[in-house]
Image (tube, rainbow, N blue to C red; front, side, top):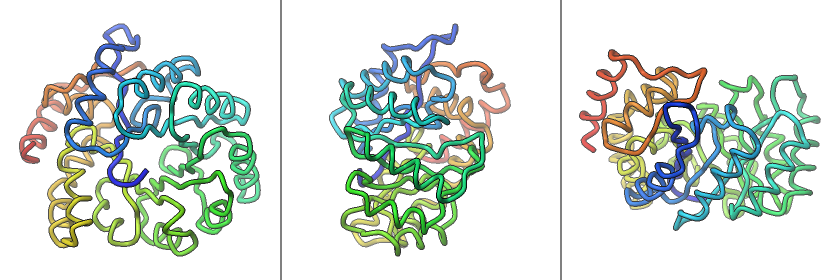
Length: 288
């Protein structure tokens, strides 16, 4: 799982049901535009609004359609649900599992480490840690990441803290050959790559997969200055389809591009006219 990954949005119909035809089309749409791997059932996928069975159905369809690797989101607040979702993901063809920190109740470092060790012990596929404190209010500390990286079945991490210092400390405490360190913030993608990240899982890649992937290609080609310049030009679009307008904004931006994004699921509401206008202008500015 190196390069540019997309936390694939989940298309729903107007009634809130999974739109499987659009989902199949969407896998081809993002892959044709350069992403290296696909992450179904992540935060941008509205995974927390889906049942265990729905997540499994999404993962199975993506695994059937994808040409590249599939890293399926399988984390739940409870251990038993996470283990079951991870087992189902493996059966459905996912190559690895992305496991968000257990949330709702507070957990200290020892509790988080014990949780991930148990998940990794039981998982039939490699496990990737996932820290997204803006949503969960739980943060994996770099020291915990460093210790977990020694587990044979812990293959990497998605760090969505947006904190480059934290990411640099995680890199210093892990093996850059064996542990895939992936950034989750599109606004700092180029800077994260220059700081030792192996790639990213970016909400931006739902809307502008070509441009997100180009940042990584520029970095690999040794032109970090151009990568940073391109990244800077996409910061406002990234912000609009993540923290500013969320999933409804992302789906509105994708619709502007003709992507099979579908509708957001309640309690999300469709983007209003003003939001649609804003994201349409940002999409145009991104030259995609």
